[in-house]
Amino acid sequence: MTSHSGAAVLAPTAPFGLPRRRTPVPDFDFVLFGATGDLAARKLLPALLQREAEQVLPSRGRIICTGQQPLSTEEFADRVLSGLKNPGDSALERFRARLCYVPVDARDPQGFTHLAELLTDPQTVRVFYLATAPALFAPICTNLAAAGLVSPHSRVVLEKPIGHDLDSSRVINDAVGSVFTEAQIYRIDHYLGKETVQNLMVLRFANPLFERPWSAADIDHVQITCSESLGVEGRGAYYDRAGALRDMVQNHLVQLLCLVAMEPPSAFDKDSVRDEKLKVLKAVRPITGERVRTTTVRAQYVAGAIDGAPVPDYLSDIGASTSDTETFVAIKAEIDNWRWSGVPFYLRTGKRLPSQSSEIIITFRQVRHCIFPADAGPIGPNQLVIRLQPDEGISQLTTMKAPGSGRLALIPASLQLSFRDTSGARIPEAYERLITDVIRGDATLFMRRDEVEASWHWIEPILDGWRTHMPRPQRYAAGSWGPVAAIGLIERDGRSWYETV
Ligand SMILES: NC(=O)C1=CN([C@@H]2O[C@H](COP(=O)(O)OP(=O)(O)OC[C@H]3O[C@@H](n4cnc5c(N)ncnc54)[C@H](OP(=O)(O)O)[C@@H]3O)[C@@H](O)[C@H]2O)C=CC1
Ligand SMILES: O=C1O[C@H](COP(=O)(O)O)[C@@H](O)[C@H](O)[C@H]1O
Image (cartoon, rainbow, N blue to C red; front, top):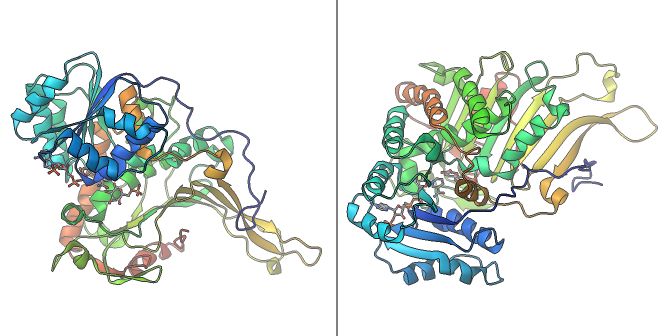
């Protein structure tokens, strides 16, 4: 086999991804708060429709949608269905039959009595999915409890970010925790539902080939990049209050860091995995005071171009005349434990970068002694590139002999494995898996309270340091890989950022 780049391709010998679930999805009532919002329209309802098309949903499963807007079920369904791609095979009609819309103001108990009229069977699994601003999580939970809607078979899903900082996150967790037990609370981070992110655990813990050299003894550094070419896409009001650190690093990048760095859990179950992630969070070195200057970069995009098309600056995108919100962050993180001492983890994320791509790159240490003549060419470090999106897969950068009978020449070569080509299967959207996991009651790919708070505990000193020492974000042109300072962050250590596809 050869790859599109002409390099050799690793032939797969086993199917990838976590074991396929056989447990059927039980009968359910899925109550979606924020059903008229952006997340519901772009991710949640399409994910449910896809599950419908795959005939995974039981015939007794209702999707009860709520929002403030006074819509009838028919108006809501018309609006939603017109925006969804028809998967064919009568799935759209079956899906419409499950939908129901109830106007509910999260802060007004009245609407909850209407929900109570619908939710009459306490034995049916009830999922309350809170796709609203986090400020509404507490009132929604309080009103659900007051209306008698919380049964032992109820679960609540909290969208990220949970809070704005450690204190606000604790307040929300306390309020939700006074109504639901921890086992009933599903804190979602959709990155954990991405096929390749799950595969990271399989890669590490089902392949001794990778697990054995997985430490400071053999790994030089790790890069985690989530690059977006998109801007804030109509979410300016939210984003300008959050910024890239809260929006992406506190959750998605920190979770990826944990999955790369954690010790092998004793089993693939929710608490074993979450216990190990928590240990990593406790070992990440705090970035306090002036250290933000040398270990972090924050920046905001100005006008530029992506793929030849002009792109306006951030202020025009959010319709404001001034803002100090960062749309780019780079951080050098260090983990103070036996396995990772001395191995920097470089985290980078930003909007309006050259490509929409997320990757984890593990760079191994150089050979200890080179036996080849200097004129054979350099030996680059081995790299393992885990592509989360697009074109999910793995590449291994190696050094090979250039074919031919002349003088020995060493060349870099890439062994590529594309999950799509390997399995031939459609790669599911993260929310498809996560939503059915909640209905099934599997919390393995969700965050526990202590994890979320430990992550805020690490993020908060960075926010404090920025307020004091770096109140103004640097600038970068849309379509570039961020400010020069981000390059400096890694070059100071004698390394360079890997430019993602
Ligand atoms: N959009 C995204 O890509 C992502 C979003 N998230 C998170 O998901 C959540 C929702 O985000 P998003 O969809 O973008 O937000 P939107 O602003 O698009 O939607 C907010 C939703 O909340 C509803 N709402 C607002 N106020 C009330 C109220 N008082 N009572 C009842 N419902 C209310 C709105 O209803 P109405 O329209 O009727 O007012 C609307 O359905 C946020 O926590 C966000 O951080 C997480 C990851 C990605
Ligand atoms: O949670 C969020 O994630 C998206 C990026 O998700 P992806 O699956 O497209 O990589 C980001 O655009 C958004 O700002 C953030 O809230």
